Image (cartoon, rainbow, N blue to C red; front, side, top):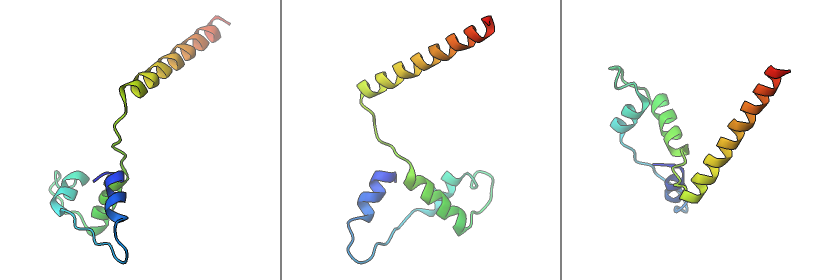
Amino acid sequence: MDRAASYVAGSRHKDQCHWFVNGQELDAQSGQADKGQTPDMATRLKTLARCMSINKHKAMASEYIAEQQAEKEAQQEASKQAEHELAA
């Protein structure tokens, strides 16, 4: 469950909100199940908080292209500055 889904699910309640989660899925996402360890409640809670804070918002293609272009220009500018400093 990502940040947006958590907010929607949690904000629909008036008095109380109960969260039901799959403990095995949290254990798998914490990485401790792979090591043969049994995570405690604190580890599961941290994993749940991390999962619920992840933003899985999909970007439009135009946003992605603009971001890539800005990144490319920043790299080119940094490269030019480095060459200028080496020449000086």
